[in-house]
Image (cartoon, rainbow, N blue to C red; front, side, top):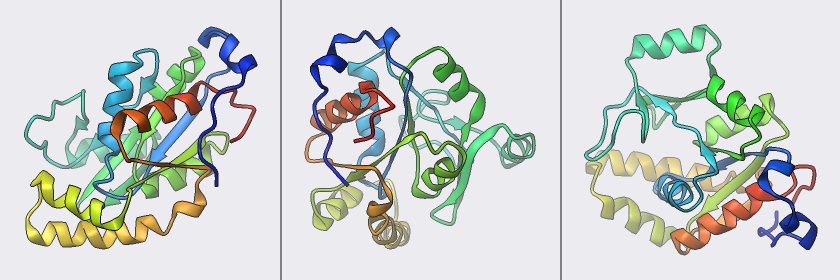
Length: 207
């Protein structure tokens, strides 16, 4: 485990086109802010390709199909799994299924773009098996109390759902040692900058 380090002068002197493409997996406990950090990366670094997951859950207020998620039916999700179109997929919080369509990931890497998967712990473990060269990054809250505050504060779940998610979060936090690097999400833009630094580094050099 290590914190992200700044690029060396040699790494900084390379253009993105000269670097081999790197696949980075961002995972962490529920409500830690994975989606918010990924959105900050998208806004500040449009050269970074970010996967859009497919899910069987219903959209939350303000979410757009194809932007935040691909919202699909159970039958469509089944078809994608059976045809091998999913790089990874899992049932999350014992309610809905989430997965990463494989084709766009392969296309982004083939085009030489740094690629980011913002996924759950189960998905990260699957990618570790199928694409072991991917850099696995764990996004961690500053404290357990802050994680609870963020989950309650967003107001998108009822009390039963919050308790279920907090139970899942305890299990997810225990998985931190499985990851290559930990980023503590004190502030969204700082976490996004740390993540992009890792993405732009030479993939042959592990942190």
